[in-house]
Image (cartoon, rainbow, N blue to C red; front, side, top):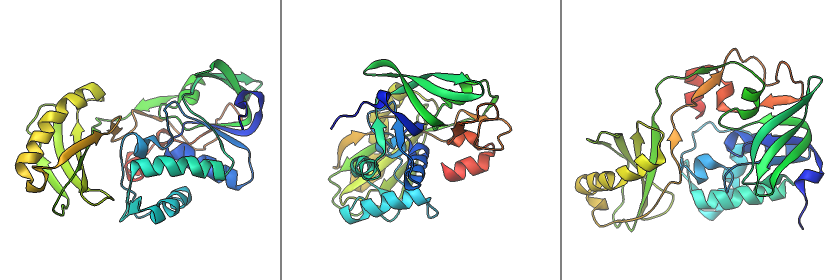
Length: 286
């Protein structure tokens, strides 16, 4: 049954449906809070489902363990690797199970504050501009939209690279991990990694620019390189590619971050990689 998210006052509104936002929403839902999570894309978990960053590390969070527990019986999780389409389905199911409301195609436009508290966020969605109201707000967007609007100081990070993934299928012989030199101006290097599915692998290349159009233009050259150098891929089929690039780091981070609570807005919190000032720690968690 349809429920109008703009007519409610949730306990917590989480803006950003990436892995940071999902972890926050699940943690709060487990504590009995009524949560809504808003994401600008067509699905949750963009790092996996859109950018095809499919590897989980050995040390995973409580939220990640829940997701992997759902994926493993389906075959969508094996040896620290996950399947993007299976992850997309089960993230949606997990939100339903935890009674977390989900609003996709939605972007925070303007934070509304009054006397040191946030009272709402003007949100752009397929329904137009409307206000999401909650008792507490969490900024888990990649760009720190709400915290930037509040005037907090941010500092730029160093040089970044951007990973793009091409998926090959129909591989007849087992394939392991390979690293290749690119030899192309826009492509730094290429890595070949197995997938969770038999006969499939991911070919990942690092680009110098955050341009999806340039990355896609580089795809034929990358395919040519791997077909020449990896015998198992000479007759394999390229079935699909990632929908977006995966950055090696955030473009900027919150300067002097000490607490997840906003220093001037008492009910605004942060949950994003940009809230971690230490570069090494961000890369460890990314």
